[in-house]
Length: 73
Image (cartoon, rainbow, N blue to C red; front, side):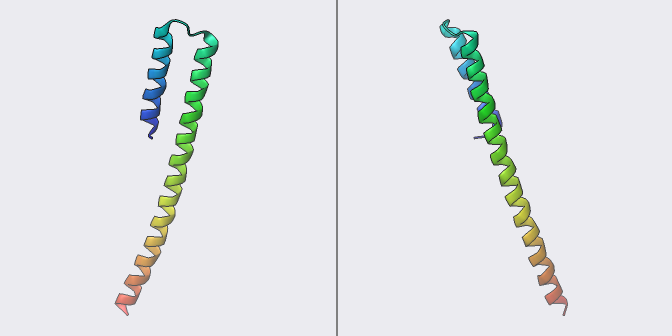
């Protein structure tokens, strides 16, 4: 799930809670906290994926450089 999708879901939940009419400030704060926690989890997952991609790219570049070196010999 992307951060954009998570944000949309949080806003939808917030609007649904408000439209029912029984949402208190505490309930809204709870929803907001849950949305922020979900967004932070999504961000951590994205950062981990980026780190893995960077490591894979660095490995690929090393292999490519080694291949070129062998080809020129």
